[in-house]
Length: 632
Picture 1 (cartoon, rainbow, N blue to C red):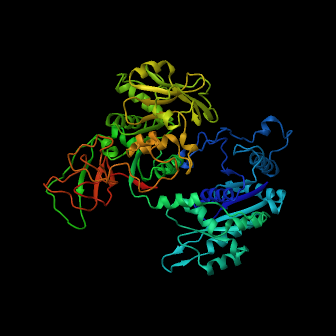
Picture 2: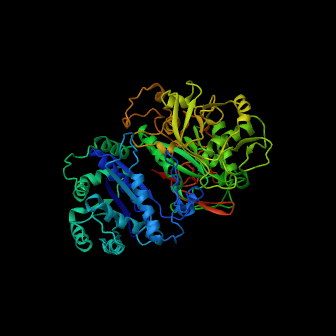
Picture 3: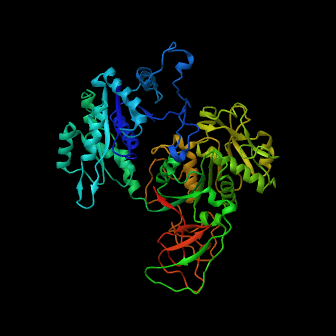
């Protein structure tokens, strides 16, 4: 087997993961079978209890396995002192070899190439055991079977406008001091590297000039595999790995079309993401990517509004007051403080074409998520709840429709008299890490006459990835179904609820599993595709198959409203297919000057419970937005 190691230097967040994935795609396009391994150098037993705000998203694989170096507990070392070298480094190497040989593409036998991404930055003390192990591993498998690609930064100082190579030189020097020598250097920069800069990096880092690759900023990351192809990165890899017998050029026509299509998208679709960890959007990285996959497939330009669930809670949503208004273009003098009191839930969510509540743990922000689900249900806004998002949707219906005001999950209220969500019998209440129901599980549809089954092509069952410790209380199912809910998907026992839908709603679906983990650019998740389609008025067309089953449709196709316009004050925004909104523009629940005239174009500040909220400088006709819009 051939191994490709991708490391990073200078700073974190350079895009090692994107680079590693793009290399894998490029090699697959050349006809090779590829597998991948991501190594995060931390000392936790598993990632199950780590904060997503600090660590980012915990990605779940089909097997749900967690590998722990626990041989010392079993007595495998026969009483010897456990050392970093050789015990830990040997275990790392054995783990890499074993995992690399696991078939992942449905075929028998190991893959041809394994792409390994080493997390962190060269020089981090946490990475040292892994770097030492990989240095030994490169010698162990032989030079013709190991290729190291180092991702580094080439910054440009605005003062002189020159691309600086010194950070890359120091990063490579540090890597070589640790026993690893890069064969290829991928340089992140704002623009393509100049020829003299490539020559300089080649000279001082002891890498052939043709092996110095530039990864400059592009409109979307789907261009990265194309950049690698255009610079013959695959040929450089083949030369290092002694695969020069492969003469097939990468077939990336479909990928090229997809990347170009993404650049041309104009018709917007706005999704409100109501979560707990909105301070770090990487906590929901797979959810973001799944939304992008679906929006591109429907020919829409995605905008995500990050809404902190805590901001929606009634304790902090009593009122919002404008205490000061100013404009750089048309300064006006107000004789008093003008303010408009509005429910914060509507203020944050009213412009959304669709809403998504992702998974999470802990009680912080739960009430805000319940309010969001209520808003989506009452205003008939397309809604998708994932894991905890499904559970809070069930709780909201129990409270609002069944009248069970104290309905809750035992995770947040152990003493509730109406437990809609309970702890799973097979879990452990004392040991949180590694005790969840995790990995791929099978879900059986209870009916074909439901949106979720139609989205999955009317299959009898589906396999999706799970990661949870609580479930919908089976004893409450009958009452909940009488309230308008339908549990359209269950596990093999028929006792565990996997999918719930709200009848007589344009699109209101909750799932216990995580569909985002299996979404791909060429094959978007069915449920995310349904959410985006419903949000822009294309759901019926999706069901009817009026459009081709191509992964990337014609961008000109627009089954939504003709053009989104700002909603004038007093207009209704409760309808699904006829709601007209504009990104970063609120409708009637917005602030307005009390002096009888519209707020001029410019910026404004609002004091929201003591915290200053800066408004976007995109005001029109007196409308301002407090959304944190993000274009993906």
